[in-house]
Length: 56
Image (cartoon, rainbow, N blue to C red; front, side, top):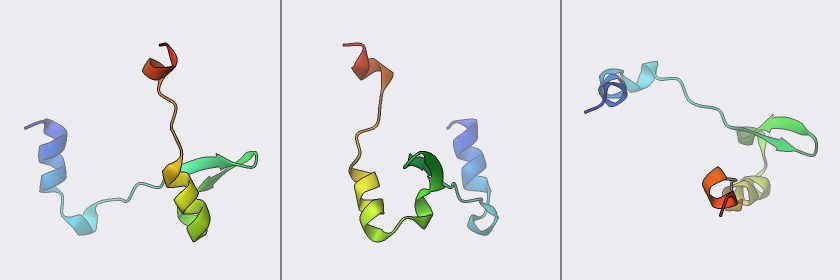
């Protein structure tokens, strides 16, 4: 088991910090948590850039 995995399991849920995802929309950055339902759905359907796929 990795060190990160064991640390995560040792930390109680109430002490864990949630990760906030931000994305660029219309020229500025916003947290995805502030998107409306439709925009969140659109964000989930996006294809994300991966360097390995681009070099083929």
